[in-house]
Image (tube, rainbow over the protein chains, first blue to last red):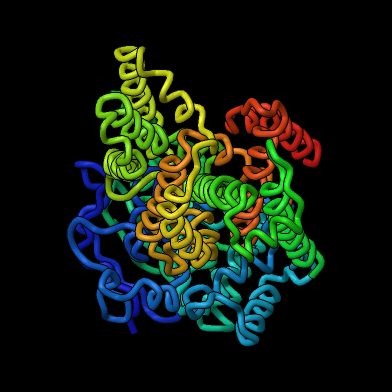
Length: 265
Length: 329
């Protein structure tokens, strides 16, 4: 069942559109990654799918309803977002940060009830930060901070989780930890995941389907095996490489060899 | 829950200090009045000299200090948070200058309409806010753009003020008190005029502490959590200029409180606005009462403008806090 759908989206910050007439639909329970070169419009497309950016043309449907006409708090109960730009004040603990995830569910008084506390605790356990729950988020490592933000999103109890480059700036072990957490959420809770990823191999290994974007247009939206071909990588990123098969994870694996000379003019 | 307890103790202490200094402020001055006399004259309402000093001079003055201190401090705390900038205060982004220009124009150009000064200051503050807001608006507000627009508007309005002062040098002496800010002229009519605006703004802002906490996580996170970012930001900015405008209309350009008191409050209770707002309110009232007390007693019978005392005492105190904060990290 399609639960999130972008229809003929045209998106722009200034005059020139960043995304031109793009349509994408996400089904319940799947993991979808958006890949593409820098500046291709990946993040912009993601933003328009969760009402962070208003499309110039087209519409975004959440469970069949226009996301811009739904009350924003109702949207927040179904969709949680982890954008790239986040601000953190110095003295906020993990538990407080995760507590903000309850905001869309709160009444006028903004006070946490027992049920909220349970959900917060469960979210903290899911990302395995129990031992750090009373520490300041700003004092944690990059990977732990990212997990704290994910826990905040989980406290919203969303059906869909959108993440914008969740592994950027993290070392390889923390990257893996985040990706495993995301997959666990998908498998154990049937949470639908849509994320922007930089690492093609990561996208291939952890996604059901991949959406490739270049110059503001969706050039392919298919499963991992069909996505990773030499031709496609060349078209997308302008690089040559070899493709192997990772038999243990049963997915293709791309190793870049050299970049193709780009026209200097 | 130790940190929570500590914060509540800080708030309680500030409240007790405010309460105490309210009476100290009424007791001290050119004529010293005992606490018994204060209470008896307040309750018996006999028309003695003491009663007149208390009710007609010191009580309105102290109440004005409480209201204006709270208003300026909270106004600064709100702006600093909304703009995510420690320097953002009403007098940096031009709101106070707008109030000042309106007030000075009346005082210098139309001295016959002197009684319109408070209203003018108030309207000036609001108009400036809307001007800055619309200048910085482009598919939503970006805080840094609003600050830059504010600084530019501030300097334009400042130039306007200077033109007035240099073109009418013979009338400057009459407005000096307004320029440096002081409570010496504070009377019941000022208190009556600003009380409703300030009280309403204070109460409303206390309903927005948690929303502001969320807003400070960034626009995208806040939107994702279901906060109406633009609307909340607009309400907070208007509240802030309401507070600043009311304060300027009563006591003139007394800006420093709005910058330093929120930072002092932060060093006591942290950045959680649920504690920062009440702490700023109480500490603002306390600071202004204490500074005004010093201003009118230290060189009695000569009175020093409270703005001067604020800067002389508050400045070094503020630097001390900054230093300790950096040492802590």
